[in-house]
Length: 299
Image (cartoon, rainbow, N blue to C red; front, side):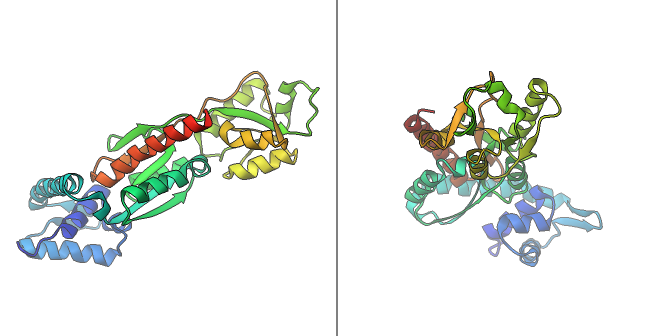
């Protein structure tokens, strides 16, 4: 029993929760042989098999089910120790952060600065992607905290609502101002990537307002959308906070066709299991940073 350690128990819990060694290895940033070795060492220490291994996968044995309950208690205890005893400045480890591009262009640097101030020894990794991929990464244990178009409607996920981002319609500054603003929508419409909620909503509304002949060009880059609008290659409904300065510089202009898509609702989402004090604190910091940013920008 003295040879059992929390790393072995973490590997065991990840294999159970993610239903396999491969996903557990990704979540733990280990190789599959390393995870398999930890499980094997744990079984040798306990002198019993924890999994029935078949061609269909790994299933807990009766002793494995008993260990699961105890391992979760150990995990919860360690989180309480980290939360209540360990000085935040002494917490080490890694936080894998996934964010939507809107967030990356707004207050992500402020969040990273706040995290470094709270946890100076914490290693922070982040990637920018569409919300669909961020959601999948979170559920697969590849991301610790996802800031995405939410909420994520899964029982295993906790969501913290963040301030919304209102959208505005933009056209090139050189567009004919005497034209009916509604006619601008007959031009190519630039918008969010295809597999996103804003794209789906905008497409449905444009079909109602303009008709199925409307030209829609999805993009995963908001900065590219703004540049194309500036070059008068299309119009776009984009976050107003990102377009204000460009419009003030006289490069693009807002227009009102009589309607605007719904504001973007983002959440800071993290898994409830395994419970992570760092991920929860990071989500709460994200809300604080977002509220401060919204107040400063008058969103």
